[in-house]
Structure formats: structure tokens, C-alpha cells
Image 1: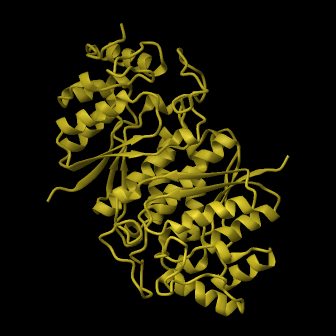
Image 2 (image 1 turned 90 degrees about the horizontal axis):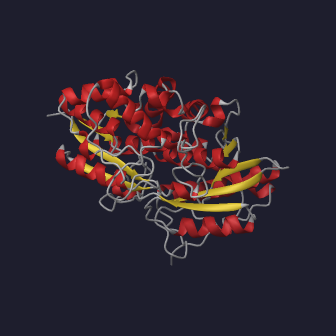
Length: 224
Length: 224
């Protein structure tokens, strides 16, 4: 029987690549997405389409209401998504987001008796978001094995981060080799309902640069 | 200006005691509760009443829908709440519950620029739930300081567990000294809408034993 894995699936280009990697490694995949009050809902539509096209065993979209907490340009209407790259930790940082996402993945993994969680954190995000760094992931893995019945009973969890040391261009090349179709993915922080991108936000710029450096044409649609 | 603290407030006797302790230590208190699909909703009504009577600065009840994941007698209708104490990790264990709760507390703390999170884990739960042990709490605190902008920028978080080494009887005595009124608290896993307890579940038995050993009369109401 195939081993089960939970894949955190945002609907962006990183997470579809991670799903393709987990599939290739022979895991039976369970996709987990979050409606956390993000302004860019097109991402969730993309996640649903991707989950379907990869025939995942189950896809859950959990509603979290992080906008009740606010504090990020992605969840708080009082904070504008910037139209230029920023130094330091960006205002698009969502407090404790990956901690929260991994916690739910951990709970679901335990119920499914899966020991494997995949998350598409990578070297580009790494520079800005504290919860995309290897030391954060290692600390979460340690926590997971202390927090749970599975961990205590000797069935430890592994947090897989296959993209962590890759640049955006390397991720895109790897995904393309694995047959990933990036058409449905949404990276833009301000995408419209059809998932069309703004070209201007950090996420759009990093994506465009990645495709350019990979020498691959980006199939994304832009707002007119 | 008073330092801000997040208090995880379930509406049970432990969390009201923790709130009283944080108040006594001079913190400006922000209470956080979760509607996680638990069968015993009376707990949340109790949390609201307690938050009001302690005049917390803000009280958020976040909806999590953990019943979408299931796997616990508290969240899954397919698993019955047992009417006797169990050996090992009980079926009332909710996968990754405290990890999820602390993650949200961390996110809110960061937004409020608070470095202090209080949680009422204690020595009695300790014996059964992996995510009530000191090693879990220490691991979460380490994670918190790697996961966040605050942690990275040198404003570390402390996870306060003032009850962790106390028995139920000691908690009740301490709370009583601090003037806690336990009338509104709900401990029972199968309480009815008025918050009346069943007498039979683990939580009822531990509570009754605690009041008995403390030599204090339990003001709780039981189902007729």
C-alpha cells in the first residue's frame, strides 16, 4: 500500500511542484489548503483545479479567519499590498502562518496515520519570511514528534521541503521536467477573480524573474 | 503601560485560574477561545462569561472546524466520549490541538506586540495528552522564536504554564485564593446546553476528585 502524504497546496507554482514531486515519489497524496482571509481567493480556485488534475485522494480547504487577527497586507484591508520588492521581512508576512498551516497538516496526518508532510517553502521566500527557513522547519519537526500520539508512540513525522534550497528558476525547471502545467497556478498577491496577475507585487516579480532565468515561457494570464 | 498577554481560555477550571494568575501578575489580558467542532459548546458560553467578568481587553473565538479532520471523541461523532478513566492516551485526545491553539495565539500575540502567552496545561492532563508535557511546551517556545518576525528581531516569546506542575486540587486551591468563582466553568466533555455536567466522563471525575481533595465545594451543576 502506498504511503500517505499531506501536501500543503496553496495553488501557487511552488506547491504544485511539491505535489508533483510527492506523486513521483509514490505517495498517496492528500492536499490541504486554507481560506485564511487572503485577499487573493483565485489561489484557492487554482488549488482545487490542481488537486483535481493530480487526482489527490482528498482535498480539504479549511477556513481559518486569520483576518480576525490581521497584521499582514495579505489578510488586513488596512495594509496595502506593496507594488515593489521590499527589504527585510515584507508586510505580506502573515504572523505565524506556516506554524498554523503545519499544525493543521500535523493533525490531519495523525488522523490519517501518515508520517509525511510536504511544504513548498523555498530559498527565495527564505530571505524574507522567518517561517520558511530550515531552522524553523527542523524546530517544527521536533515539535511534531513531541506533540502527538504518533510521535510519542514511535511513529515520527518528517516535514519534507524539497524546494527549500532551490531558486525560483530551479523550481520551475524541475516542475517542467516532471510535467507540471503552470497555467492554472496563481502567484500574484492581488490576482483578480479569474486568477489574472498584477505584474507588480513581489510575488509577480519573483515569478517572472524565475521563468525568465529558467528560459521557460510563463503561461500565466495578466490583468488587461 | 501594562504588558499584554494572550490567555488561552477554554471555559474550564484550569483556564479561568490561568486568567486570574495573569491578571494578578499585572498583564493586560487578551482571551482566545476556539470553536473547534467540540461537542461541548457550553464551554464556549462559559468562556464568554468568564472573559466578560474578568474585563479582558478583547476576547476572540476562532472557528476551526477540526471536525473536518476528526480523529477524537471530542470532535468526531463516530467516536463516543467514554464514561470511565482510560489508560494511555485517551480517545478524547484531539490530534495536534494544543499545537494548533498555540499557533493562533502566537499569530495574535505577534500582531498585538505581546511576548507572553498563557496556557493552562497541567500535571493531571500531562499523564495522558502528549501536548500537555513540559517538553512539548519548551519545543513550542523554541519554534515560536524561529517562526516569527518578533522572535527573529529579538523580542522572544514566553509560553507561561503556571499550572503545569500542579494537581487539580492545588489548582482549585490556588484559584480560590485568587478569588476565582468556579460556578460558570464547564469541565464536562458531554455538558448540556446549560453547561450541566454528566458526572461520568474523565473530565468530570478529575474535577470532582480535585474539589474533594482540595476540601472545597464544587459549585458546578449536574444534569438531572
